[in-house]
Length: 435
Image (cartoon, rainbow, N blue to C red; front, side, top):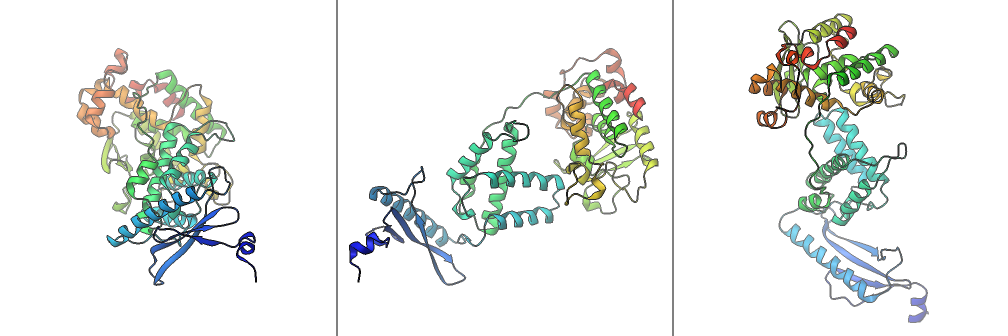
């Protein structure tokens, strides 16, 4: 039979005395470990679940100091006391049976059931890609701490693309933090697999105040350059229709999410909240997914856009292609031959076409800046004499329109007096060439 010293040298553990409830400090040959019991975890099985953690220092070496091991035992004991009080107050125990893949799959099911767009699904998958590539992620959602969330934010701020070498912008970091916060709150409230409360999740993923700049606007030459690049792209890619999309965003000033659900005819399902083109009534009905308000955009002051839409509608089978710009998938999926990409999208991806137009001009722009550009032009022309009507037409707040857009651009006398939106923007020539 082995002696006590021989058993200890052979790697056996012995319990060190600990006054901390539900926690035992185990001394090993190379360091220490904590064995503890989680209160109320296995409610379905009728008992508590024992776990064991080996203690390591920040450099990865095992902790060999008795004092440091006792400090960690105190921290674990305090955490267990908080968990016991939380369960005693009526909260459900943390579910350790669900891992990160389970949380991801169930959250995607929740998004699909809620009618999320393909673009939103892809955005959340990009956030998950960053999280899975991060080497500091804990093994289970229940082990996530506020310090881990701070470390994940640090990883996002220091991330650089392997393809371009460009870092994530502050707004991209904030978007990923917002997505991951939504996922964790879903796991906390619905699946009960995240131990952190809402305040801890918000504190760990707090990005601070982002810089807010005044709205951008472009001169007529730059707007014509965008339309010219879009028309050249369509000539090289016969299946593409990025020129009509750029003209529509530029002249109507809607959000790109409102354009991607625009239909030729009114949807038979009124609960779908999709806009449609009413050429006979001389208006475009848009439903703002951000504001949840339906608004009408008149076509009588947009004659060239009206002619373009009528020509497009004559060339398509409305029953086979009910959406004006191909629907949500066309604007969400890149033009790449992947197994998960529908065959119909190959060669028709407006997302890829927009990126090509961006690279074809020598200045930065985005579909959303075209919306701000139109608000700037119309607010400083004859259309701005009725700011309340203009605000309703654009889906803007009246005070925001008055504060940020009025007086931002000086127009010529002809632009100020014109009733045509195309003449106010100075794109009549390009619209005539492209329609």
